[in-house]
Length: 401
Image (cartoon, rainbow, N blue to C red):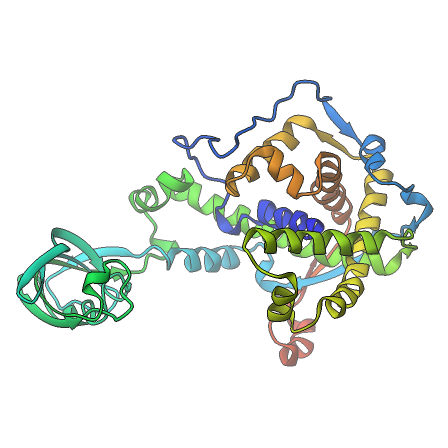
């Protein structure tokens, strides 16, 4: 479980799914981290030989790495960093940030409307049932069923009467649950959504939609971010494929008890979560995996053998490449993710298996693997469909070194 968390963090930090972790959030603080992690008493760099002391075995006794200088890997052609792919990825993102333009036409599903409304039950107004100048996106599900649909097809200046019924399970105000209501609505303005596209971006649009959260205020900054994001996604895919190939080429002997230790760590994590939420472990495993605890532990053991092999290969890469992790870089990593998960820094480190274990895993995924995977021979192909890939690989593929 802890190893999986490290892998997820590695992917999240590297890929950033376009923007996460790259924002300029000047008004945010590290208030979620109750214990500040400092550089005091920390070395300038954590060195490979010291990081590997966190294991109770000598990894070079268990792993003989295969030749990784020219490993060939294949990734989807959509991840190749071309102008066309950057544009496609950008347009996918831009579709989530429509540009609203005022219109004198009819409101449609997806339109934004500015409204005044008054709601009554049994002829009497109720708390929270009235507002003026409220913005509402039709189809968002922000209001009870029928409210938003009832405004579709109407224009600015029109007044609409909606006879609706509150849901029987309405929890926002239990006194209204299941009751008939009447809403009188005046539509002040109608805005239709227009999707912005890569070729028509403006600085004003970028600033309005991406400045506060992501610190982007120009077209150039947005396009650069999109290119960086695609490069990161490609790198993650290459590294994943590279590691799989390297494990297959290496001679690996698993230290006695290591898989069982990982199984126990995972089960302890489940047990801790179940206790926290008042669940029985047996019920959780049965509901999630359809197995008894004993059956699931056997399944988990088989699954974890593969991840333990990857773990050993990465540790040997750390040793062979003599990786170093600047303490300032590691501490920034801890502080950022502790905040993202609303945890104290000490709790975050604990959840990841302890400081020594986390530093070693950081070295594996952010130092050793990227450095080794730079040697990969990358081929781009259409991997989206098994039926098409065989036919298209030769004609559509390109290669880089």
